[in-house]
View 1 (tube, rainbow, N blue to C red):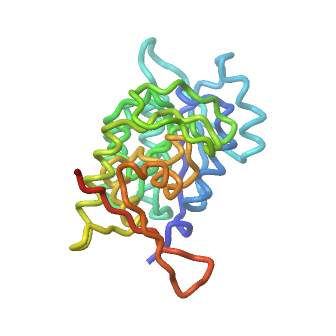
View 2: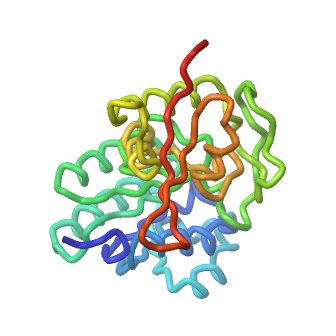
Length: 255
């Protein structure tokens, strides 16, 4: 069975819905999940608003696909991406797809690819509609990637912004996030209420494909959960390797 980093990935990018400034950091992120064997970007390259893409495409070896807008008000780029994705699927040369767009029109494509056993990673801005987000195995907001601009938080704060966060959060830790953590811990906890943090993290992504500690200003899940000691007990257990500890968590019992 292939590990995550062994995956061969097809990267298809909607130039109309992704800023060129995000591409370098996005490709670095994709490298964490596998090797991009197809790298294509779709748009009408005769339009002046896409002129800034040229140097970015050359630096990242991304193939531009020309798609004219045949009819006013219709997005021919989306159709071209969907057709190419299905063609790539039937070559059986990839293990997954990275769909880069903030457009909900790719929701059905993501579902179809997953039905065929493909891993689907979505990339888009915060404005991306939820149907497309939940259709992916994992969804990454472009705003949290290195070199991307950050947005203002949009939900009520429960805990203060962490002093050691390396990047401004795009969301704040609210009651819904605390409830998501609590339910996920309880779903897989042992008889004493403890759950391995790694397993909790995997379950969080299955429940919320857009879950990522970086959304809340943390590089990793462990420092995020440590900032929530008001809500969770933490137990760092020794392993056979002195430099490695396994982190277990459980929800604090209400007084």
